[in-house]
Length: 508
Image 1 (tube, one colour):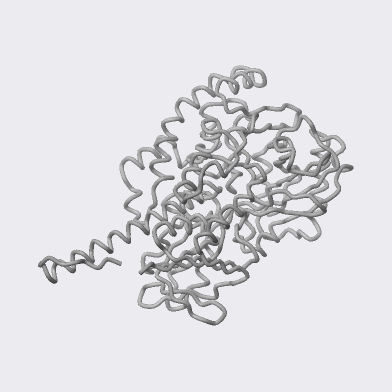
Image 2 (cartoon, rainbow, N blue to C red):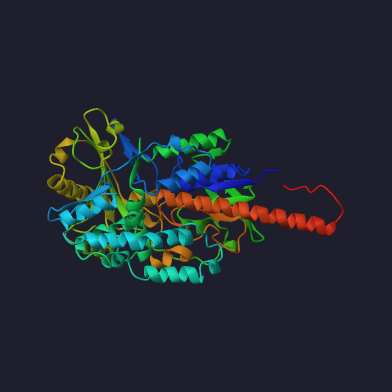
């Protein structure tokens, strides 16, 4: 008989794992408390405009496409467009650096903007290449269901080469002299809710991967991936129950045996949690709760969604705007729990690469301002003023006439994120600090003492970002296949011990 699997939450991690499990013969049910699947992947819409609500930058495209291919979705169904330049970085004094995928073009750009820095960049690419390949094999391609699997000589040696106990910003300082380039080759930790000065040097894999694999845009918006996954799930007979919150997990004799929904208990062989991991503890019955651990949330985001009555012809799809000191700005935010006086921000302008992203003659824009997670700041009173300050700055630096062109605007704050179930208002799960990375991050097998319970998502190893969450889904599907094979092997051995005469073995 087929095994039955339940997912608590219907984000991209759950959807990807579910597709992989259907290929292993599982019967799958997804419980999602909101009205839609997709988690952080969604659209924000209003007055005829539509734009991605959450993730926008497609990294590691081959990883994403390989996993979907394993799940049974052909690569041709995802129209990816290369961004060139990958993005622009606007510095406060007016300098603009264009980041190119090509090593040669990037070296030329560095010599144009920062004379003398190209040699360090070439050395960075050469020395980081082997570290990236080793790091991918050791950390992205491995699940640490047993801690001893992490503590190998190879892994520890690699961490020492990275100087993982140092920061991503420190790693950049080994190759670049200008403070502005230290920002350019460490700000990528912001993609996953980290801070360059506090995220381990291991995360230097992100800026390297941009040059090695490029930055991409999914035509129609990243959130269009959700419809593709849902259609395939429905075609395979997966039961999808939206507007249905799981009230509690059923745990007995050290095994998770199902879920409680709308007052009724439903039995499953496997239960997979797909939400921000710290919330899992509240679903466990009192007698089964392992000791609670306090986690540090990732940074939050203030997000502005704009429909504009004009187009900017020479804008890039992705742009970063930095204050006089990115480090000081982020440190101020961390220490005060308030948005900094001079914040950094990122602008996504999809119309630059996809003219069909907005009505004819118009355009859409998304502004992301790194913000403290849910805390003491009064977002109801302060969000509008923060938005006005940032839009005025963007208008002065790159988008003349921006505020006058706005025809539709929405704002989302860390308070909204917390209301949607994101841990303490952080937009990326738990923070990617040294103590919350690799083996120290929650794993796909979250509790050794509870069998049959698994986890996937941005707060689970290997971490945040859509392709990385999908890689976690692949690790989980492989783990379940491995456990199933072990079960079959034990069953065969047991039957052979009971009777060594020729017989037909009944394998579930």
